[in-house]
Length: 245
Ligand SMILES: NC(=O)c1ccc[n+]([C@@H]2O[C@H](COP(=O)([O-])OP(=O)(O)OC[C@H]3O[C@@H](n4cnc5c(N)ncnc54)[C@H](O)[C@@H]3O)[C@@H](O)[C@H]2O)c1
Image 1: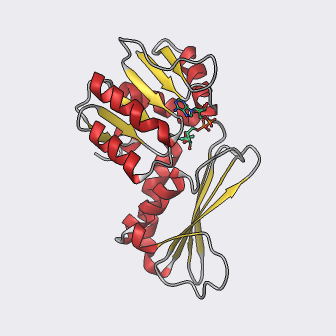
Image 2 (image 1 turned 90 degrees about the horizontal axis):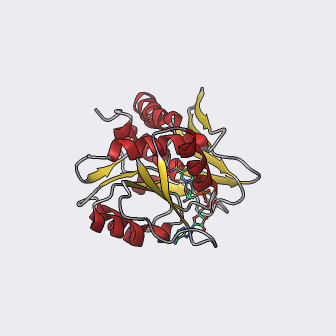
């Protein structure tokens, strides 16, 4: 499969190039980046585009793929609502897989968190804590938001109505039903996430720790293969893994 990688000079891009070079299933036909020495566009015959770049890079790139009918896999996080609208529009023309986390483990965690929230209920306070390397540009992580939304789904509430991002000052007692998300940054941490359910007599913590970017790159390559010949639409990694069946 002929793939183009957008953000090829970055941490994830380099891992994708390395991993796709190790097997026989993929041929990287374009390493695209704004960095010197990289391509600016993909050639004719490209069968899928994998994008791990920067939020503002996604709309022009996916719009071009939609015009050309090329499936698109988005790993890039931190898109604004306007940028997301361009993605949604492209997904009416081409298959788009979009996930804040392409690892098998985190996608399993989303199901576990939803179940835990459903079982434990509103008596348990939900807090999500994430930690990433010092170079990460957006906060909180796309994964932390996905996990918080899964907890809200399990509780049967809308995350946006109860979301809190960090705390500072005289915030008062914690209201029931709040879901708070906290972002730590430092060192070379690839990605740690914990969802905490704090009750009066016990605390449940569900944790995932990514040990290598390979976990995300392998998932994104699998998503590109899955997207080939799919009907246009906006899919997630859970669709790719068959968790939504
Ligand atoms: N979904 C997942 O599983 C997952 C996992 C890891 C990282 N991410 C996300 O992927 C993105 C990249 O992460 P990273 O750690 O590799 O970042 P990075 O900063 O190391 O790499 C990003 C690359 O994108 C390039 N870039 C910026 N603007 C561009 C443009 N207009 N066109 C082409 N290339 C452009 C930069 O030059 C850089 O080389 C981030 O949004 C991050 O949050 C997602």
